[in-house]
Image 1 (cartoon, one colour):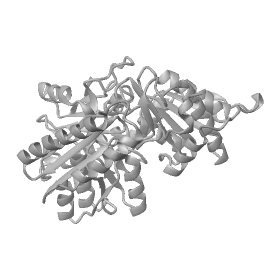
Image 2: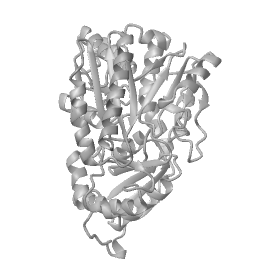
Image 3: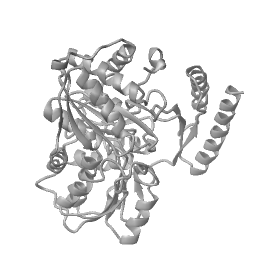
Image 4: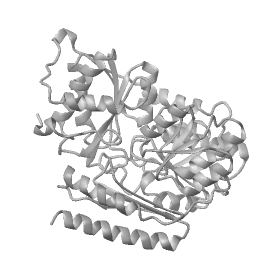
Length: 453
């Protein structure tokens, strides 16, 4: 068993994630994780779990390890094969089962991880995650042979999820005459995504839909949009849709090749639902949401609240406020009247529905949203950076954030999913953004250099 179990915090902002072969992304850890989590789920009265994965090559290893751990704790397992994260959340609710997806979302193939869902289709609470971590060093034994969990394969999982996605817009949406380009990031939406849009009548051109285990998120998908922009303009398509590796985020391209991020998508949906008295309160964003989005929504009497980064925090804020719509610029959008987590397909369908209802191209739907110039960069952290170094660095980063000027926002944070520092600068002046960002990058580079020498 991994010797780090006694001391390390393994859950980040979105489940567990890291480099394959390095703690905690090892078969032994995942076996123990399945056993521990299985016993805790059993104590809560949950006796069944759905397990899925995205398309990265290591998924088979960690799916099998989790399966062995859960069945050893007398938990029955339903295997889906490669399916997007929101499908796991939906099917968990449908089958009154817990859910797990082996995925590292938008990360490269050499990373992997896992996210867990309750039978309500929501991610585990911090309290439950801490409880799992505290139990990882326990010397647990498997149950007796006659109490082992059983394993079944859900052969109709894709069909069930496709029908669910279509049900969010049927019977009103007919996409006949719409030509869209779909970039599946060589990830979990490569097979279900095209089927949803084709079955609704659209002509679909596919890119990033030939996963080989190693090309997930590689120069494609929601984090690398150039190929999609190029294809949309070359074909004269009506729009482009890009997912990330596990399908819980979406970014869109309008007919002119312009990128519509999560802020643009939130604006389009919020304005339409407000106009038709369907919004149900306000909109939840995060510290990364553009100030222009907040100001525009407030000007239209739509309350705006900034939650912590991560769709779990957005969902918690939505439930607390009893609101229905929230999301992040990265494309994690929650339509709580339809889903319990970010769902790239469902959100794209909402935008298409509005396009068809208003009989306007995508570029017109976001025309009245005026966003402030904003730029984001990531600075890699040294692989040996420990907790103490990160804590000291965090103190320095907070001081830098406080230096922001009027009508300027600086957000600097240690990523919870990758070994990087994310820096966002937003200002009413584009040139000032570039200058400030350059200064901050240099300052943080010096801080990192000083801390390791």
